[in-house]
Image (cartoon, rainbow, N blue to C red; front, top):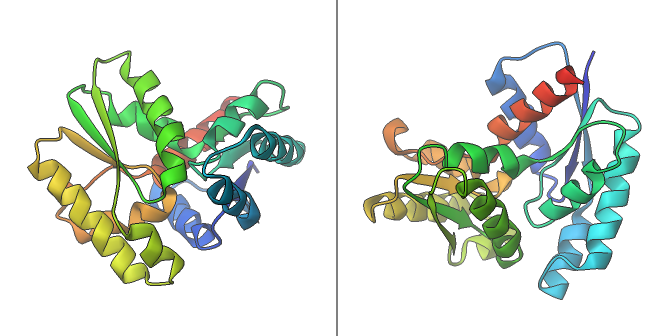
Length: 216
């Protein structure tokens, strides 16, 4: 039975990815969750993903790879560490937003990528701009004002409402596609009509990890 190890920096993302697995409809595999909130806390304190934090994250991902068929890093701020770990890990190591970026830029046009926390902006921008080179999509990365404050205060309803409002505004402003960069933002999509919902990372990222584990 394929085993997918998920490295989270937010404890609530455990439930998000368990729900995403149900949404995929795929069976015959198990998710094993590991939460390291201290890694994101350190990046927020430093204002960015430092080489030391990236190295610690990459080492942890390699350790998880030793006992899994694929590893999925679910924190966008730490995303580049997955690329470092993937170069010499025993199994596929993926960042959850890589599949999101590929899907978001697939049809070109203006793509607005929403983040909740500032430390996610630059890793996200680099990822989406790299994906956009293949399709000519125009990338705009924006932070949703006050959203992360609401999340850290435990006000999940306000967090989702602020993200949904920003996604709706991006559509109204002419975006061909809107993507929610952080897995924790996924619940906001359900607050909008199906025809205008933004793309979210948990389901597509998890599906990519499952496919990678089976391909190996």
